[in-house]
Amino acid sequence: MHFIKAHAYGNDFVYAGTDAVRGRQLELLARELCDRHTGIGADGLIVYEPYDGGASMRLLNADGSRSEVSGNGVRGLAAILCRGDNRSAIELTIQTEAGSKRLIRLGPTGHRQTFRAAMGVPRDLRQVPITAAGESFSIVVMDFGNPQAVVLTELPAAGRFERLGAALERHEMFPERTNVEFASVEAPDRVRIVIWERGVGPTLSSGTGSCAALIAAAAFGGAARQAEIVAPGGTQRVEWEEDNVYLTGWAEIVFEGDWRR
Image (tube, rainbow, N blue to C red; front, side):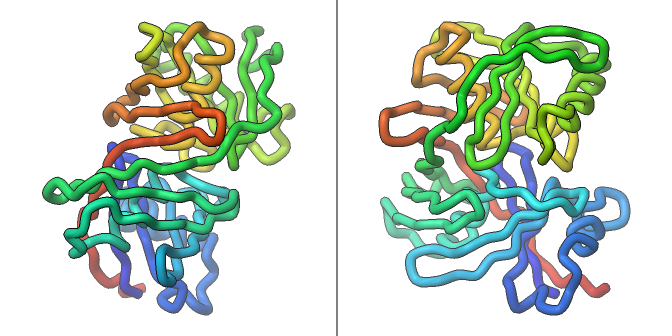
């Protein structure tokens, strides 16, 4: 099975064409490929089908569970589709289980390609009280193509992050589980986050999580609607406009090969 590995800010994925995985049990394959000790190592598996002007994709998390969309995963796929193409302002549409995502490549810069992606708009945005891991506090929840829960707070220490992240992901409030971001508003145009990804655990970055953090911080934390979102893996720009939330950042291909199992 031929595969390509790509990442955005350390949020990494294994990509395989639909034909390459035909007849395979995708949940099991995702767990095998994404294992960081016995597999290739990744936060998720993306199965894709190219077409003129873009591609369709399905995403499975490292634990084999399905996910609707990944902002970083979409950009990684766009980088694969655009490799070797030196034109500027390439436009692509990626079909995901959370709908169509439109991307414009802002220009290749070596191995890294930068894209501005229209990621959609939040739905069911609200701030609610919750009790998890023995603590009571408020969270901002929304549907951003996938479920998101944002805790506006000073960033937690490692032990508390692990404890709260795991508890919130599987909290009874979220029957499909949820992605979790802890977000600290450092300035109106700068928000720092750490991420607990549904089906993965701690990740270095998250595209949809960066969008959700900006939305929560702008709606309830005093941030501007355009800001730099700083994750452990690096900084992305998020703009919450009337028509869409736009995510700008880079992605790069790491390597490709053949999985022999």
